[in-house]
Length: 311
Image (tube, rainbow, N blue to C red; front, side):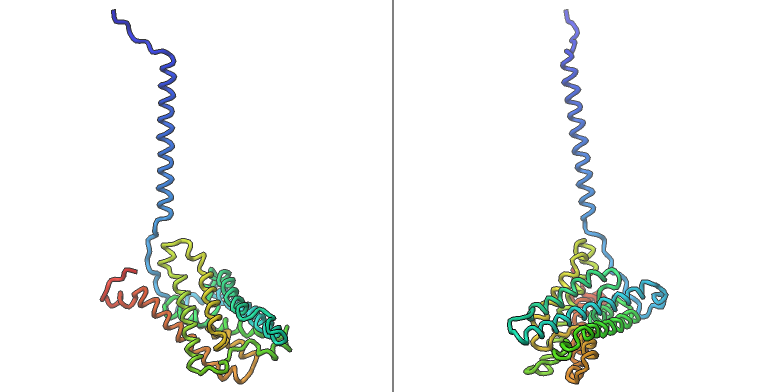
């Protein structure tokens, strides 16, 4: 006689536990897969489109507070830049005049210039772009990153800020300021005009090229950490250029820096060499803009339709 099978209560308990375990496992792996997909989506390369070029003249920006706020930021940043750096130069010369091993040395001066650019670009990048240099503004204008009106106003603000920064140094260190050259850029003895001009061209090229690379919108879209780190390579480029060219010209690579120091110091030698510190940086900035926009980014090639860029 066949009797029906009656499961033991233990079997019900075991089956229930196995069912719960399977359900929990599927739920866990499902949630984990969803998280992995979410993370992959978050860090996936973003769709990129070149931002449209800035108009040559944009009347609308004249009515925006953000435009004037950016000009003020450039003025204050350049003022602080000249105040700290020229004060460092004066302090070094006053200390080393009695003790050749005293003062911060050329390395310290280079750190002061590079460090201040790092700090000020970090502070003002989100407001004005953190130019703090007419050569940088000129290069970005040639690349159509800023309008003509904004470029002119930035350069005026930078030059006025440089004059005020050097004026503060002279008011606080009047005796030392005159005695130790006021931090003015001049062609040093033993170097020809061509050497000085070449040093300014190459030095500014290094700086402006670094600015373009660090702020490249395509790179920023691909690597989200790049915009945060941008001030670091820019400041480090200024530091390295100063190490190389301080013995030649005292390192300009910033027409506002050279102009402000010359205005306050007022020495004829500083004014005789002043053209080097405008022509050289502007040529270097123009070359850097052309190199980045039309060779590395192949803008001209795309426009002509001759090649396909893999950039």
